[in-house]
Amino acid sequence: AGADVVLAAVHAGDEYADYANAQQQEVAHALVDSGRFDLIYGHHSHSVLPIEKYNGVWIVYGLGNTIAAHLTPDIRNTEGLLVRADFERDDDGGFQVAELRWLPATWNGPEHRWCPVAASSLQEMAASGASCVSNEEDAASRARTKATVESLGAAEAGAVEWPGVED
Image (spheres, rainbow, N blue to C red):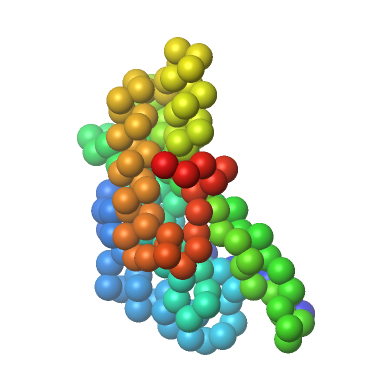
């Protein structure tokens, strides 16, 4: 009804998974195929899920956790993802994502201290003697998130870690 950008928020997925299940992929692909959405993102699994570019539209299957505490002892439910999508007008007058960036984060349980764990953040924390959980666990969180986010070809399709520090 005249919106410049239309997002779909999908509440689905297997809790504490590190993959998008078949139903999530089918629904997200159907939403993209409808031609009505410019970006799709998901939540519910309490764990970071992959990012995929399908038919020119970005799908962020799961943003993970930002701060919600869970009784289930799974390291993945202490990890989250911020996503920044920069939109630009295309030749047809519509909008599309020109750049997609993702920021891995973790939080240290009972203290509820949220921390970005991008490569540059880890370098800054190590230089100052700080950490979120521990230097080793923060680095493992980043590595786990990066592997998951990029498991459906996000890096090859142009998604970059925010603030874009390369390994």
